[in-house]
Image 1 (tube, helix red, strand yellow):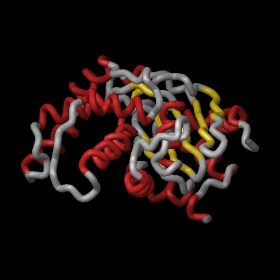
Image 2: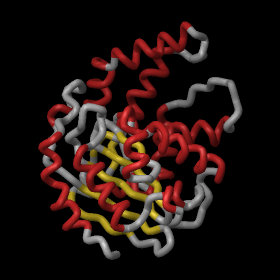
Image 3: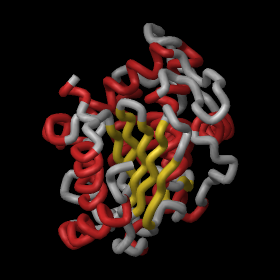
Image 4: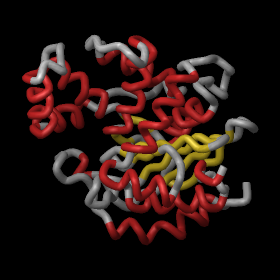
Length: 262
C-alpha cells in the first residue's frame, strides 16, 4: 500500500479539535474525543491494514441503518410495501455475520441513554404511525431501533461490512454470498446520496465513495476493491466525524478511489 495509515492519522489528528462528541446522548458525551482509528480491507488481496484506535469498540449508531436496510431487503425484497417487525436478536445476529465479528454486543447503558433522550425519533415514529406508514407498534419499533444503535463495533467490523458491499454481496473472508448483488448496489446508492446527513452531496463530490456515518464517530465506506471502517468521535454540526471524514478524503485521494473518476 502506498499510503501509510499511521502518517495519515497523524496528518488528520489536529482536525479533532474542530468537533465535539455527541453531548445530546449523555453516555456518548463521556467518550474521549481524542481517538482516531482506521481499517482498510483489500477485497482483491484479502489483506487488512489497520492503524490507530482500530480495535476500540464504539456505538454503531446510525451506521446500523445500513445493516438494517440490507436485512430488510434480504427478507422482504426491494419492492414490498409490507411492514414487518424483526426482533433485535435477529438484527444482532445478522450484524455479527455481515461484520464478521461475533463479539458485537448490546451496550445496555447506551441503550438506556438512547431510550431516555430519543424524543426526536419518538416523535417521528408517531408521525409515521399517524400517516399509516408504520404498521407495527411504535414502542416496540423504537426499542429495537435504539438497541441496534447501541451495538458495539470496531473499525475492523465496519471494514468487513464495507468489504461485503464492495465485493457485490460476497464475504471476501470465506466466499459466501451474504446479500444479493441488487441489495449491495441499492444500499451503496442510498449511502452515496444520504449517508452523511446534510453533507451527503458535498462529500459525494469531495470523496466520491459510498459512506455512512453515525454519531458514535463511526464511518463505513465501500470503495472499489476496499471496505473501510473509521472511528473518531468528535463530530461536526451535521453529526459526522470531523477527523474521520478528513482521513477518508485523504485515503480516497491517495488510493484513487473516487467512483466518479471511472
